[in-house]
Image (cartoon, rainbow, N blue to C red):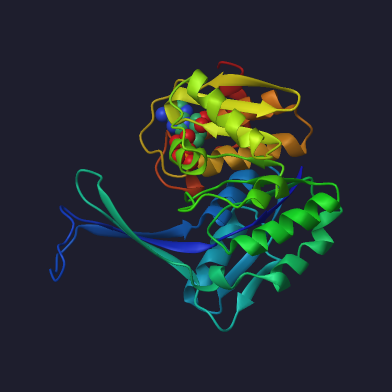
Length: 306
Ligand code: ADP
């Protein structure tokens, strides 16, 4: 089970306060938390916690937040040899203010993540021989992700793009053909093909629209509703696992980490989607992003109906 993630590494700064401030206003909040974040880092941690060998290709700044991010990634078992320390840019951050109704306000500063380019894609080369799956998202420059996907597929691997956060202007024609699979949630699906998936029929229409654009494998994530998938071998729907969801942050990232884990060990697509749905479901039962990702034994227990 060898996986490469090319993507973002952030430090997330959460502030918890009764209500969100208005422009020009100063508010005293209740508490704060500083955690590892970024979709690249989250997906890498999710796969590593399941027991996969995971390399994260990306960038942090040469600063305190960069050191913190590295320490956290390493503590979850993510390999850092291809995570470049960029002397010219700061580590990416997100500041997230959450009020007592769970409404939030988020500012993301991409920093070093936005400097990811050809040099970083080169760092994939030594990893290509072993890795079976490459995970990509949209928090780093798209050109770098596409170029990574192209070379990874040439080396015989499978490139999975999570089109998150939703692209404002959809995708150019070539993007659909440059990756093997995409895993949009409801909002991202609507942004990409103009169909809001809410049940099996609408998800099937959305998946068909993606395949028509040249995509080989479409996986439509619909939260507590379930997952629809379509590939040249067939299509199907996987029900969401019934769990007591308390926090859906990073459920999608845990889904993708689980999908990569299962595909890299040779599961069929339907089995891998079911495994990933179990990972996403378990992630909703605890708070946080990376640290909410389940261990393999928990996923196996859920799959076995225990
Ligand atoms: P995202 O986090 O990208 O918005 P989703 O909300 O669709 O994506 O969650 C990803 C996956 O996690 C879902 O497809 C599903 O498998 C699982 N999941 C999310 N929310 C729930 C839930 N409330 N109950 C069970 N499974 C869930």
